[in-house]
Image (cartoon, rainbow, N blue to C red; front, side, top):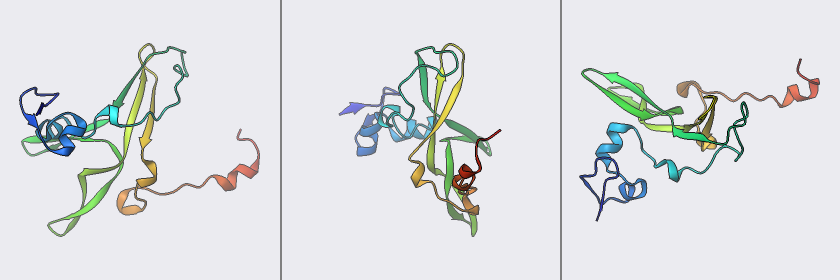
Length: 144
């Protein structure tokens, strides 16, 4: 049985734990719900567009939110599933839709953001999302 890659103590025996390489408890504490290696490359394989440096850091973006005496670390998403909490619609921080992955240049720090599985992002005011269709403006000529 494998051991958690983060805490190096707990045994990982559930399929999801084995797939990402660390235990559920460490996943909850760090906000890393997917192994970065399990996310396919989202950016073209090329040097930094700003300084041409060949090395970038790829990172699953996370955010921290406080709740009472503690805080929750969760993957950053374009939207979150909306659930009901005591009769009120509430964003489910355990269900990010369209996880945000950053690529940062190790030399100049220029950072590009990409979305993993953008076609799964829910659309609507309850998710804080909308579709912007620019296809009609493409016929208007060059943007100046």
